[in-house]
Length: 577
Image (cartoon, rainbow, N blue to C red; front, side, top):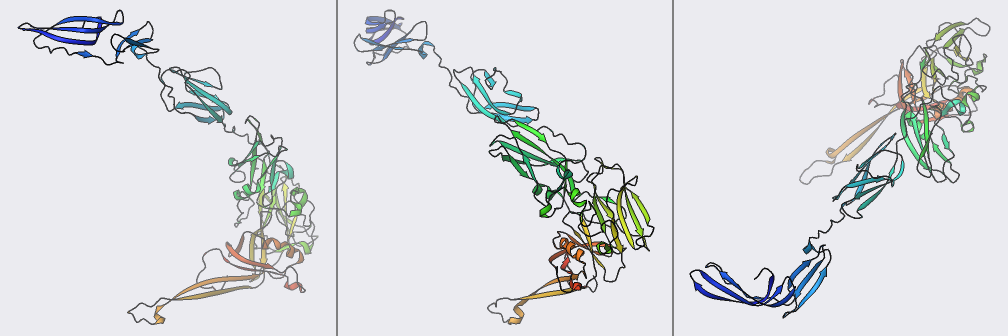
């Protein structure tokens, strides 16, 4: 075949067999590349001895003869159409002419990872596919950048876009919402403030209201509290979220959150005044009100004191300090309803205690005085000159004395006196509390002391002079094992017995005055109870208690307790308790 022809129908004939080889002669039709037509042709080919004879060529109709490329990538294809006829087809962007098709968009799925901080978020963009060119990234339709990381992004809704410039229209878009952590709160300074002089009893409903929110908008409240009173180690306890009502208001209940943080004060033998740290603590809240765009506005509430107690329903929401300033017992603001005298001696209103009685006066300081002392005055009755002992308290805590709860012990008392008056004063002698009066009485072999938490969160003591009765009850349960075939064990030998023993102690208080009878309702409703035995407090488990609040005979007004010690009992009842 010549250089400028493509065989279409050619017949070959070999001529000569000389030592120098042979000659092949071909004739027929061929496609002329220059003129791009089929024409008659003939040609001769010298064959070497080892060359095979050329094969005849007979193309089928429709066979591709030739492809012509212009200066671009458009191809003209020539097909054999029988005889000397041809047929052409034009193909744009033909691979015959060097056209390389572009890659497909293969970015896959795009995602954004967040690392948030109060100053702003760091967004890192990634995708699962392959880039065929250079990647470009943009945030919220801004200028493109080659880095896939955006720093210090503000909170709210954002749109991140990425583009592969190696493929036309190859983009991805990701919507992301950035929620920044709240900035570190500013701890309120100074003593607790606010309604009710900053004191909240948490054994009653306590609500915190948020106003000026967007109707139907998001509102958050975060509670910060210290681990114990005066620790100053405020930490986040819980975050609550609500949706504001149609007026833009939301209310959060705090008492159920604060009460589990408080523990009962467990009295221990002491001769000096102690600051209580378990049954009260300081707290504050921070609220976040979100606008329509999702941006929060933070506000920190005032520092307040939570106290493990509650007021009667008719006085809830009342300023406790103002309430106790002129109440029937006038020992404001001691955390007790028990009678301690109206400020001047009145025998019917004075609590009688023994000199050995484990008794405390719990006093909640209403003032920010810098120095305090406790005055204990002993006398022989009205008109006698008292002997006064002063106990100077240590330096004021970091936030001052305001809302510090003092546990003031009354024992051991000076011997030889009939009465005791306790009062809290400044170091200069200014009275901060009204005097609390007590009358001394002798201890008897029947004197027993019950200590219990009262409704205000402190501890009261009840001296019992009634009868103590201890019983030991045992219940035996028998189970008979089934008979086994082939054995002759009698029924009596197949019985198993189980013995369950329980111990009950019953204690009556003895005669109660009308004032004591009213106060004893505190004991009936108390959560914790201890019995003082030989100077030690034994916690009691008392499933049953009953108070005879009325009787025709005053001597029968009493309280009866049925209890056991709050630990595993022995299998026998000792003779003394």
